[in-house]
Image (tube, rainbow, N blue to C red; front, top):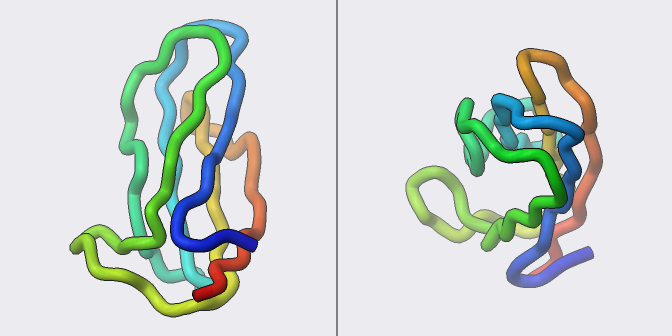
Length: 83
């Protein structure tokens, strides 16, 4: 559970194209934190502030983040936003 920010961490073995998106439990896109940006090899940490793409605060609930690297889904995890 988190309130109001959470950290999403990932590691890359080489420079790669990355996307990181947040979805609600019904599969609707809430926020696109990273959209097809190149990241260098190494560890990375991204902060999500519990807001949607329009920078509006979203309600408490279960959300899912999906990390896509070079077009392949490499990680999908649930998060619980509690306000």
